[in-house]
Amino acid sequence: AGINPFGLFTEQKASELRRALEINALTPLLICHALLPVLLERPSAHIVNVGSTFGSIGFPGFAAYSASKFAVRGFSEALRRELADSRVRVHYVAPRATKTALATDRVRAMNAELGVGMDSPSTVAAAIVHTLREERREVLLGLPERLFAKVNALFPSLVDRSLRRRLAVVRRHASAPDMQRAASTP
Image (tube, rainbow, N blue to C red):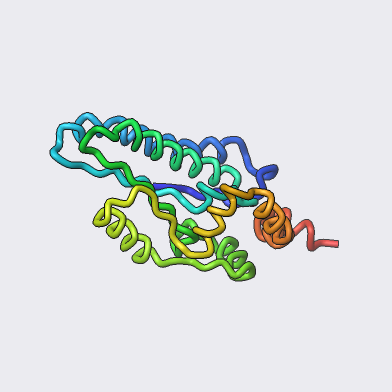
């Protein structure tokens, strides 16, 4: 389960922001909390939390979504360390843009204009299976996105400058549809 409230932060309602954090961040925590006693009793168990590239790179137009996925990444890292001496393994898989209902027509149009690659759900599913088979702790999908996330961790000002050059495109696609109509009306 997840939602992606794409839009300019200043145009979003508080209820949309709250819902994004509850569904994308709080729900995985609560599910893990409820299931962990059972998992700890098993001879072997795995938890896979699905995040996003935007859990490593705060992207304009996705402020609430990025915040929720940063939370999932931090939770996965902390829980993995907390359970390091147990038989429960915690994995974090961060897809890039994926061709699902979360990628609305506006998001797809923006991605096409920016040259952002999008993966199929089957590609993401295969990455999750590979993550489990190889027992990898954290996997970010997409070569340019994975590199961008590493650069962002080390040199965030470089990413700031790069995204600033793309900001007009993001704003045009992220602006609420009624704001777009108002902007095109004389």
